[in-house]
Image (cartoon, rainbow, N blue to C red; front, side):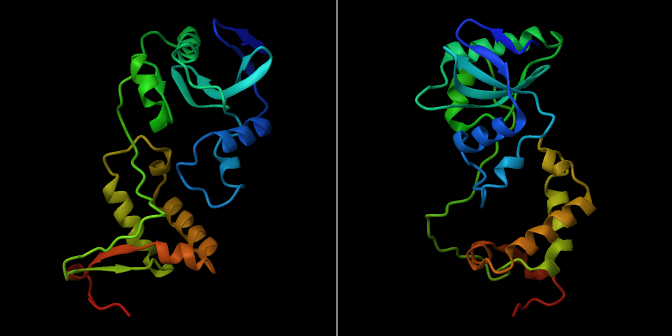
Length: 218
């Protein structure tokens, strides 16, 4: 693709990675509730095909596109994600794709779902965030289950549960990690969590005491 491609409602222009990731971090919904600015800046791989969506020489959004793949994307307020804009992106991806394969829309946000469905996409995998930082609620567990704040000594058990839970696959690159990679990720998490009482208090592991050699936690 040239530096710029003119479509019906927008122009596409190749984006420089560091500039693109800064905009991506600001204007895309923070569904992962990243704890600091540095983490979203690493969410777009260095070799990712990044493009600006332009109108009248001004940036109105950004998108990642490659053969048979569209998204994630974001728009810059006050510009909405219109059907005209999305149809332009779909048409461009089709022009560089294998016609024998379908187009995959990646990282579609809840606020974008209707637009994608109106333009022929069907949901396959969906991620449901279970983080409710402003809600408080009481949990009544059966007596055989206990809640315990996670501890580095739990890493082996947590990795085992993750691998078992997602053994059928999720479509998520995170679960392409093997056992050792998951252990390293969790060890890094516990290192970062040291001294962060709010994060530790908000985290919990549910244990089935019937499966433990010692059913009582301190």
